[in-house]
Amino acid sequence: MHTRFRQPSLKLTIIGIVLVLFVSSFWLLTVSIGKSLERDMSGLLEAQQFSSVSYIAADIEAKVAQRIDLLNQNADLVAKYLDSPDQTREFLKGRI
Image 1 (tube, rainbow, N blue to C red):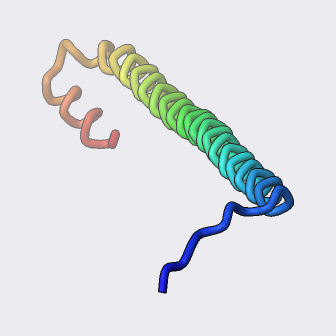
Image 2 (cartoon, rainbow, N blue to C red):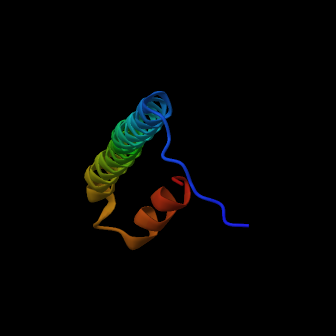
């Protein structure tokens, strides 16, 4: 038996075309939203990491400056005892 394929009707052709357009536009929308969300998340993570690093760097800088000030103060205090090594040693033992 020989079967012939019939050409689809105009209704089926239009429905098929509309369905293909709908699926392709939905796919394009999904891809564009995904890329947009990826860009936004990258920017957000970058800002968060920069903020964390800036906070840590400022904290380290403040602690180093505080220690340098304390060393300068101790240097000024120990200058009084430089004439006598024993007095200098005793002075420094009392300071941590």
